[in-house]
Length: 255
Image (cartoon, rainbow, N blue to C red; front, side):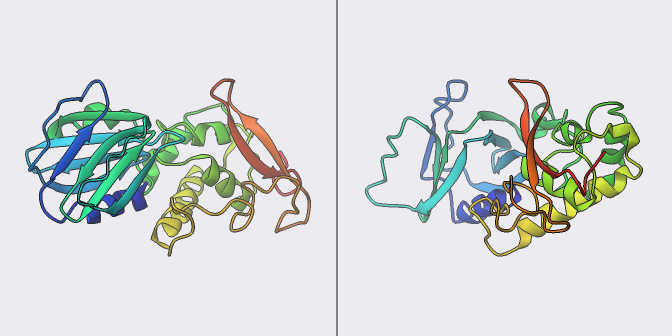
């Protein structure tokens, strides 16, 4: 999300909005024309586009969402797809939010009502490792892989970086969180590899490792572990229908 936030900040920095289509029932009709976007920041998987009139446009990609950035056309591109939820444009660049999972418009001073329940943002410049580690430790018998995917523990970790973090530390995804000897190491490792990906030259459109190519575990089911040669396995964390995929080496990450 940090890469997406940076891209939106750069694209919307060139003058006031000349187009602002909000195709979401709760915000349809809101007037953002002639407003300027000061910045877009990320908190976990949430994006906050702050405007110069004291309002914030909040969006969330969920699993399928994306922001596309293209040069503004004349006449304007219609963006007729039914999956387009937001279109924001300056005279130079147009940003389209497609298949977004959340769209809200709130006073900037009320951003906490949207993200206050989340754990520390692991992509922040000053990551609160201690608080996130305490949150993880408090999960008790909950599997560590499932706990890391809970955004209330730490915001921003998805399935890719959960698998990669646990592989690096040789931790089994189903090991109870209370048994983790050093929760701060887990959080710090996740934050480090996530930030490294965000700061690196383009890897994928989202900045994530390409499954099976750059990753050590994620997306490499049946392929040899890069450390011991055993086959990488795939499993599910959590309870259906909200369970999530994970990948691990049964030899390196044995319980």
